[in-house]
Image (spheres, rainbow, N blue to C red):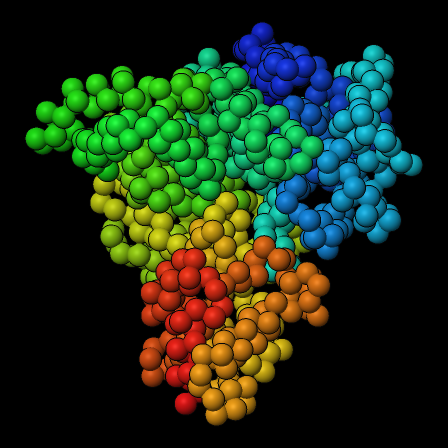
Length: 634
């Protein structure tokens, strides 16, 4: 049966035409655009693209902050039979942006005013791009640029004569036709373009709805950027399927201004569901706690006690109110009435739950939001799976803190060890899945596709295990990927090789980031180089100079350094743990093929990794770094 994104949207327009689909702030208030109005606008944009000469299966990019036009432009280009190449607004590096636009053979781009300067810098290097469509009418246009309103007007004219043939383009799209190419953060030289088909998306929507339920009168407020497939599925396509509404953050002139609009917009929109990331949830928690603190020590003390009681009653969510704890129920209800209800009022008063995208949530954060009555449900997925694989959700026995929830349905899963043997329940290994949500492959990269998808099974590169009760636990990386606090992934091997190759002061290095505030690295200095720098001295000043010399080697890769632009700044180590013991076969940190075993290094130096994220440990000349240099130089 044909189930494309166009089919999904058309069915919802037929069913929920008069209901609000998109909400956006305009002239000081959030105004709704109905499903029927959105379809009309999307058709004009799509027809405008066809009038400009865009053909089915050509690639069209979107580089913009989340807004109505973002969603309408993607729907429009899909109606025109084109393939969307959504781009992250975080792509500051000209080479990253340039690589994606070239690699995907992009012929047209939708771009916001804020992102336009970035694109203009590389415009001349992109001869394939014939059309630059600018969202904001207050931008100053240059040659070859056109306002979105003009494209829509052109589309309206085109539809007067050619409506039937235009509609036939969208209807001709098949399940296996490509919908999007989403680039993952690979190494800088080789980000991979994940190809997701129309059916990948509609299948993942159907699968996700076996885990979560969205009434049609709900409003989703999206804080996440829209380029990721998680925002596509959890943010707007699930809402489309349910006839619900989607609100986006008011875009400021700068990213910081946009961020400041978030709490204000939440109060204005009064959403039922928030699509957020753990890093932002931590900020929400801080602001809740600071507002409680402002009300004086008595209120703060009562709030802490109320949390303690709620934590005891809720346990891990799954075991809520079990055993003797049922006697706490009236007390929990009282605290909810006098304290937690007021906290929720600061978020508009309607929030039923957060959908946590990106990185893994820590259990403490989950416990906190659960206690105040705004559960933040952890899920798990990756772009290659469109992206949802499992999710915690509302309802008894459907969530457990610390887990990644239950599998969406239908989906097959295997947990495999390094030899490819299937592991029983409770035993960890690589998470491998099979279902209609598995990507079509990597764009122009058959080798990487063959390595990742084998006989329809997707090898996720993540480590985890299945519990007897059906909950999936994700434990981090099976392969050597860095994962930032906002869920972005990056492969560190190229960076590690470069640092060791080019630095006479560094013998070994392992770069680390596991949903951490910044990337760090475990560094083994070269003994002879350290001895040379120290010149027989072991006083504190000499040791500090040696530590700073090691730090300077890594700084060479930052902006302004001799090796600047080799790797994105955001992934360079922000702090170093200099250790006094090399990775060897003897201490089990190197295997028989002389490869450093990343997981074992991280485990062995776990205390040093923990220390590096403290204010003292972040300093290059911290006592432990100096001690290690003294030890290795003996």
